[in-house]
Amino acid sequence: MTSAGATSPRPLVILISGTGSNMQAIVRAAQQRRWRERYRAEVAAVISNRPDAKGLAWAAEQGVPTAVVDHQAYPSREAFDDALAQAIARFDPHGRGLVILAGFMRILTPGFVQHHEGRIVNIHPSLLPAFPGLHTHRRAIEAGCRFAGATVHLVTAELDHGPILEQAVVPILPGDTPETLAARVLTQEHLIYPRAIERLLGAGV
Image 1: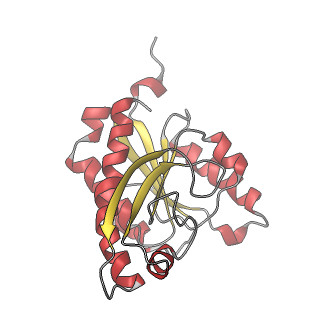
Image 2: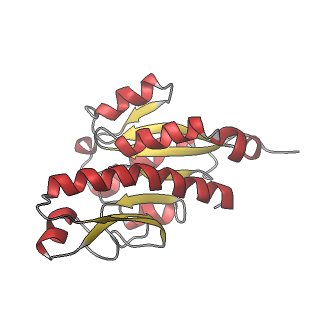
């Protein structure tokens, strides 16, 4: 007998904190490239740690279920991550889906990462291992770099580390500001993030 978990589409749960432009790119890719038919995978939910995240309304308009786990309602990172894991489990009860970080502005605890080991994907606006953390574009410009970019990687307990899945390189132009550079990098993020996820699905990861 085949279990329900094996026959239902593999859930993709996307975590956001704001507009979720990368989330939007992934949802569109899933629809346009027919991930449900090709890979038996679908965007099962969009979850935010902020009730006012604009991406929630956009996702709901696309028919994607949404949920909020407000980090301010919890006394510690561990308590928040426990609640977040429970919310994810409602959409991924068999624990076989991907957890996709798309502008999710929370540092996850080692326990959360271990629970979802090998199934958490993130995109970072630099050419990792260069410039982990915040303010990547300003730091790249101040360092005199000629190139910047974005990196899709699997998440480990160490911040902005983990196996690299895909990268895009963007030149730093004379007169670039952190804002102009960020805008050009973001256009590449929207291309490589769905592509990297699709490769994971195709590889059965």
